[in-house]
Amino acid sequence: MACIRPVLPLALFLCLCCAATATAGPTEADERVDAFLDETASLFGPNEAAVTSRLGAPRERQAVPFTSPHDDATYEIITLAYDGLTVSLYSMDGGARQFFHQIRATSGQVCFARGICLGTHREKLAAVLGQPEAVEDNVWRYSDMSGYNELTFTFDDKGVINAMTWTAEAD
Image 1 (cartoon, one colour):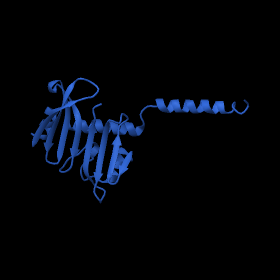
Image 2 (tube, rainbow, N blue to C red):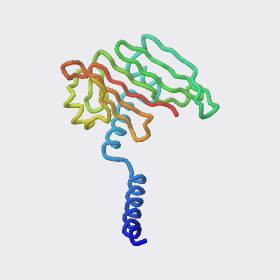
Image 3 (cartoon, one colour):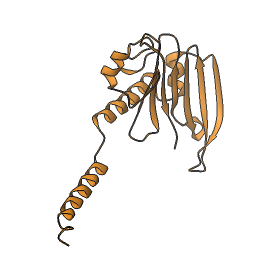
Image 4 (tube, rainbow, N blue to C red):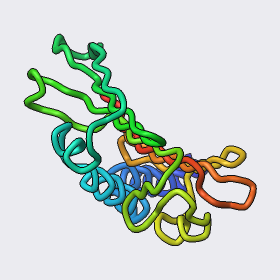
């Protein structure tokens, strides 16, 4: 019994620390990524009409039905293809509600928020968003707290962004 008593305060302390960590709010990195995601989306507008107003008519427009496994609502994913840029939106209620699914840039003069553009050096991206949460070869990944929204940047052999993707996955 005497051996157990010193362990009890330690166990209680560890439980309290774990509970505090589990209820802790977003980190500075989470907030930085969330803000960047929002700022990038606002550059393109809130819906398809705003995107086409800012970018012009797409080279191609495709609408594909999408059904979430979590509800009975039927959505569409609308994809607008431009040279070097693809913008996809979830569309609900006959287009009355829309939000971004993906923005992918692979060529041209495309920028995301805070001056992060194709051709930006890795060091500038790190200064803006911090170190990535995952690195695979020449790809840096950042995601928000939910894990459903992600930024992906691909670099060439000189450390320059040659592709960038903003993705929001529907639950």
